[in-house]
Image 1 (cartoon, helix red, strand yellow):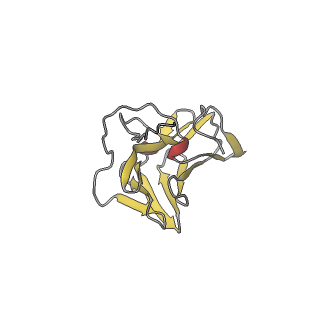
Image 2 (image 1 turned 90 degrees about the vertical axis):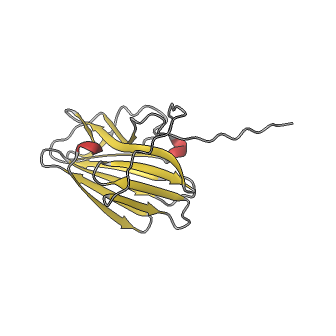
Image 3 (image 1 turned 180 degrees about the vertical axis):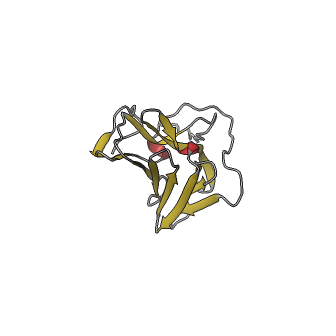
Length: 169
């Protein structure tokens, strides 16, 4: 498992035809952000949502764009994120044309396909009270990568952090 706080520069090949990497939920990601917020998922029939048993953690995924939002206690925390992998070219989940959504218990798998690209599987595990786990699998023939990320952002203000100040006496 690779932590996203450090730079993701290498991924391990688990087999010649399958690449995998993982990252921890939003509390473990390090981002710069601005104060402007812009939800990146519009409402519509291609929008899917899954939450954990306590309903604290929710992922919304737009099957038409390949972008997702993360909510904690019904408050938007990360907006417009997607997966990316450096192959011969940089491939993101946003350029795929076909996506399927499957939910089993607290796990969501989004499988993205396009005829000229390897299959991309994004897995979201919603077992935690205040975060989620995510994994990216890319399967195809003769794949090589030195960079993979299950969570990539290009939305200004896409991470909404709340800071509570405490004084210690």
